[in-house]
Image (cartoon, rainbow, N blue to C red; front, side, top):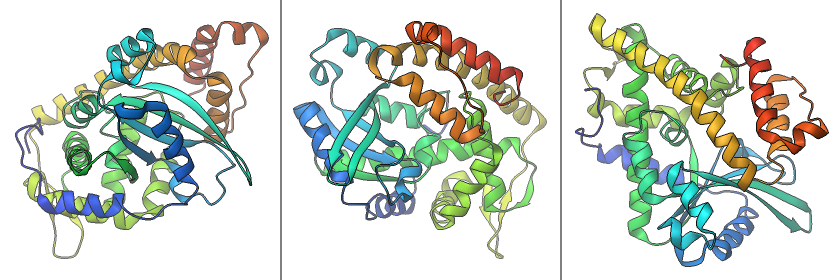
Length: 322
């Protein structure tokens, strides 16, 4: 496959498999969030997407649920012109949501992005922020109409192709299995975002839903050949790439890591405006994934951007982030 997925046709089977996966049942209480988001965004709402570890949870009062909210237009989505401008400048905007139920308080963070930016991010963004996330399992909880539903499925298919075509050239050619292909790729994307997840996290994701990754990888093969082919024994064959191609791919991932550091700082800065309790959430997530407890002093709570710089520097020094 060429370095750009833009010119590649998307296999119909890949889109069909994604549509089936997106429609799988979820906990009925998730619809409370959908209803709240419909009320919040009204006519601007195109779709509500559930993703992350919460797909497999049974207790929605523990942890924080993750959503992506697709909107038709930023200006229509916000009464506040500043929020619309920030979302257009560096999508997505991230917000916090709480819903009280008979069983307790459910918490969520949701990222707002236009449907058009979502499609661009899945198809052709250099940084993997969108295409890494949406090559993984999600549930499409709401779509305005069938056209939006198809656009989401198609964007996901593009994300899968972008993920594989961007990560496979780094690997050694020859026979390989699903876990090596995806875990190696996920580790590359984690490093590009200064995320605290360890290598074991990628392996855990694959072991939790191997059928998903197997179905999508097999369906993607026709668009990826000769870079990737399915062998008779069920394993995959990674085709050889030229030394120049391998070098270029490694350089691109190094650039993504530096780009990710800048984007992480900018997004953290923006989240201090949009995301209530963003520091507590960040500290909780770091401790959850690394076991490292980080302190939020009163001074740093007053200056959250400084806290972000300090914590990032500490984690870099300790090798948690690279």
